[in-house]
Amino acid sequence: MKKILIAEDEKNLREGIARALMQAGWDVVEAENGNEAIKRIEEQVFDVVLTDYKMPAKNGLEILHHSKMINESTAVIVMTAFGTVENAVEAMKKGAFDYIQKPFNIDEIELRVDRAIQQKKILDRVNFFDRQRSSVGFSGIVGDSAQMKKIFKMIEKIAPSNTTVLITGETGTGKELIAEAIHKNSTRKEGPFVKTNCAALHENLLESELFGHERGAFTGADRQRIGRFELASGGTLFLDEIANMSASTQAKVLRVMQEMEFERLGGTRTIKVDIRMIAATNRNLEEAIEKKEFREDLYYRLNVVNITVPPLRERKDDIVPLVNHFINIFSRELKKDIRGISPAALNILQRHTWPGNIRELENTIERAILMAEGKLLETSDLAIAAAWEAKEQAEFKELRLPPTGIKLDDLEKQAILEALRMNDWVQKNAASFLGLSSRVMNYKVQKYNIKNPRWNKNKPE
Image (cartoon, rainbow, N blue to C red; front, side, top):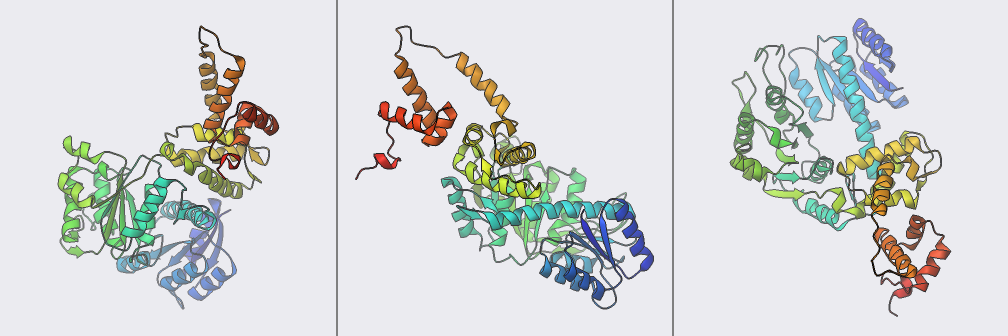
């Protein structure tokens, strides 16, 4: 059960929020002033802290600061009275997850709290990556391939500057983690890292999300909203799936990049900002330019430095460290004692093409851990295993022997060589793949005089 602290000096409001959240299934603790809230934070770990900005003794900013000192991943939502939006913006820049203006309805509070809990879950996962990563890692990114090592070096080079970066690659390759790594290693790391998925919102909603709006700017705009550009000032703004922007929004974004200023929707006051832009897309922007779907001048503004993240099928060396990390994460989250993965199951993962990239691998391991009955993940735990078995059976039925005949030993030697190649020349894994013991595999390798320069016994003196 997720634990939530409500810090609010107005008793009726506090008790009303607490009652609603408890009915929604959350464990709620109340505090009637700032001092009591800080005491509770020191005594217990909270997933979410919901605090009024203005309270007796300690105010909302002090509660935010104390909460972040005790547990960085606790999500803090600040409640603020109408007309004090500047206070809320200040809180967001200092690490608050969200803010909500009074008066509000209970449904809105429940929505914000649920969103904060989901965000905390993701943050906990990233933090766990940081603590547990082996081989080469960078700010939560796991990888041991030559391609990823090259990306790590590029991040180190470009992070300290304010240069605009365009990250390209298929969906699920980890573009957002790379953007966050650039921010965390930059001179702006103490500032906010604000992200927006341009594909997730309708054109009008996206403009409001990016630039904010004034009260009465359009139907339903009953209060002022601070946009992402404003929230990101002093830090980094990450625009994901930027190719999904409309032409008019692209023009407005280009103006902000050129002038570092804009107006909220429905407003006349020019707001100046200081941001670093990082954008990402899974589309070919040069093709989009040819089709008149993306502005060429915006593309050149964005594409000062380009980082192309290769798909997982092109960096198979990353599969083993990624699998190990996901096993660590989900065995802990799901409270299962999983110690690793069998060679046969790992072989299937290494041979799969991963159209969904790392996201697909993550989901595969999570499901496998849920299904696992032993301490190792087996092929029977993998959802993709059945498809692979059907494919291999179909391929095996198509086996054709030469019309002139072939010796059985030659056929066996070819099968062993192919199994070794498919298992990166690891004899133990190839033996498991062929259903042989390690002793028999070693005998066969000697019988057919199979050698590989990577094996110690084949290395020159």
